[in-house]
Length: 151
Image (cartoon, rainbow, N blue to C red):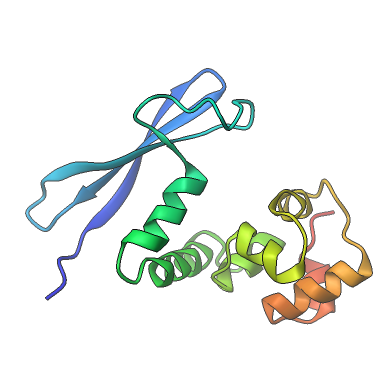
């Protein structure tokens, strides 16, 4: 029998950087720190506080070290889309409903994760050839993807 755990994020804010502790809460209600990680747009990737790991490394280790970790992450993305983007059709919601990370989608279409992020946030208009690749990777029509793009 699998032991089920509920995971939650506890956010501790500091100037310019968000740090998080991922806690596992088991059925008895006790919680343990599983891992700490840091996310920041302004902190260089090589400056991660001691005892923390980057979000990229966290996801990579989760996929590699936890049985069915990749499948769990895919399902978690789909759950996020269904809960937080219910009735909302955006590029991000389409990607999450497909269970894809920005990094995985970027590999499927032959671009960078940063480019996918810029498209999601409306900071970059993709070319028609990129739209075709994105639509194919996401399993939607170009028209549906175009309608979901940020303006």
